[in-house]
Image (cartoon, rainbow, N blue to C red; front, side, top):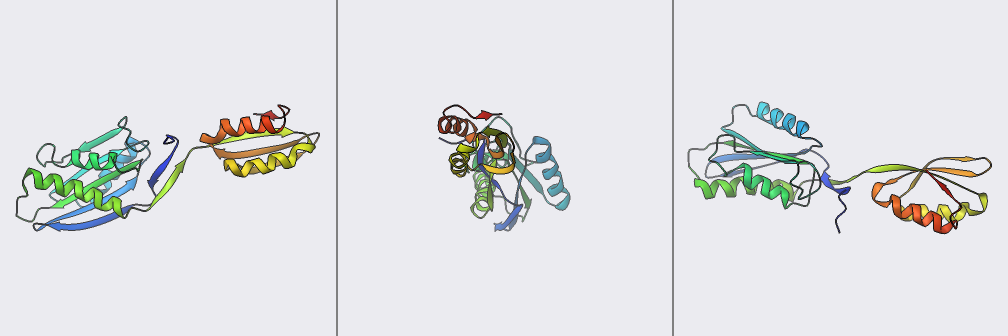
Length: 203
């Protein structure tokens, strides 16, 4: 099952270009975390290519395939021929938090509605095919205190849950400050309680 707190996102802004029937299509993709960031990205590309015939766009904020925060624009192309196929390509890409702009310089040959759908959707598929990606992980902190006899048992647990020790103090008890993916918090908490027979203090 896909973890909504952990998913692939663009690692960098990425661009591809192709020519179709003398029209030049430039597709630029970037990571965005909010609709406002997506709008700012679209504006920046529209300014960069201010002399283009069209700067059509689509974005998806959130996990891959999530339609809760999406947007699209045909930017003057016939209705449904640009933004919709672009968004469809994003929704099926397995990548989240992404915005794309397909810039078109018209070359004098009309593509027709089917040709436009293929050109705009294909531009997004092309940029996705070579897009550098990284993983978006939502991190949380956890503080664990226990007696000295159980230090080794706990330390052996942490790597399995990608928990990083970011601080530790040795007083009456030993206290570990951890940083770990949110998706593993509950499981690690239970594993700690099991390993210490419920004697650990967790915050």
